[in-house]
Figure 1 (tube, helix red, strand yellow):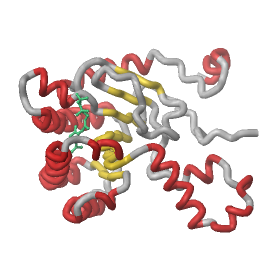
Figure 2 (tube, rainbow, N blue to C red):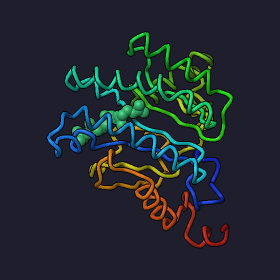
Figure 3 (tube, protein in one colour):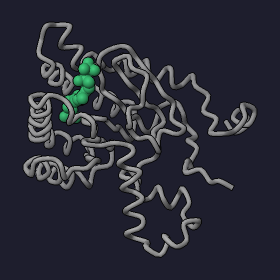
Length: 252
Ligand code: FPP
């Protein structure tokens, strides 16, 4: 029998416990206004603040944001360096507030590619907020789903070298312990702004049973109202997790 790593079927579906977001459309938001693309990223940070607050008020426990993909290094050098500066400034400015608001911040991805100052700030912010538990904010930076799957396999074999000779002993639950977000439940709701309908190498293992919501609006315009529209859509979904419709009704 194949055991799914989706071990826990959520009982309350009125508010998604874990929301994962691809914040797309910053560049187009700016271009439409004859502004440099980087102005769109700066406005994107304001949308992050709004959505974080709205998620806190609505009882979301995990908010995971795709801030920089492994593929984003291919962008013009100027844009990459502005994004790095924005991460640094945001961390320096916001960490006090996150700490006070009970937000636990974590950053997942291959952080070794970032400049030492940014790595230091990330680790300091993670340490400062590690006792918090109201809302878990995770920023995926230099993250790729395939990278995650590969690093998990490497980490598993490093920790349990004897399993290389017994690969059949590796099941989904064991393997998933080595993914970079092993401590979080799988996302209930995925949101992508900006009109594209792709997962773009985000949490590809963890999104297997997630409800996928796409909206044409650009990320800098995303706010509590847009979030509520996504939640409303989510409430209308029937999450079967492999069961039949009749089973879902009986279990509810
Ligand atoms: C995608 O829009 C967005 C990004 C690659 C960067 C996202 C970053 C932020 C919202 C700001 C920083 C966030 C934190 C947490 C400090 P795009 O540039 O691909 O837009 P386009 O598709 O219109 O070109």
